[in-house]
Image (cartoon, rainbow, N blue to C red; front, top):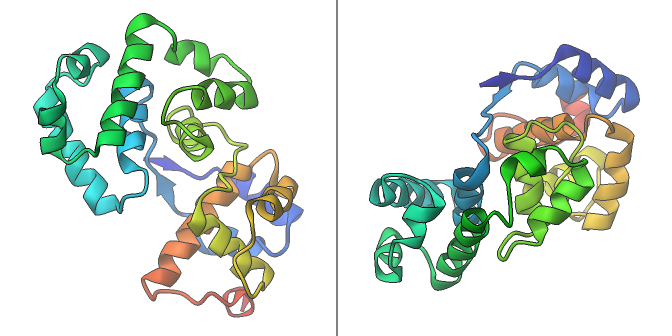
Length: 214
């Protein structure tokens, strides 16, 4: 587990007073840094549009069935077996395309890691079934990049609404602009907002910033 860096939290609190209470309340949290490469991207494809519990169940079945979670192992698996693990037809197609790209060398995790963030995201988005959210979450959690804010994430947009006292969930353009003030630690701001969103949904905290600040 990776803890948040106090220096990053201090920088965010200074850059945005609205975020400061969250740096205090959630500065202790840690996040799980995922292994990179093919297994990580395969897992993110499975997770798309699923609950955490459902995705974890399917991933566990898939890993057990594959044994070796490698491109070649997946390519050697037939579609019926993967449907038995719980993968939908589109996700089987995406998984096969991902495996083929890694197997042929069309995509390489080390090469992605060497790219600037936006170029790395574009390279990943070029893969079938990989959208911007998947690419950005991979770069955040598998490569530990600090300056990303996945505006396609509904929970983050909801938390931004709470932060700014908006009546409705803002669109992606609003959130992208809003997050600019958190650069170069937009990923850390995302972790704080995710933590707040989770705490509110569990009934542990209030969504009113004035009460959190108090």
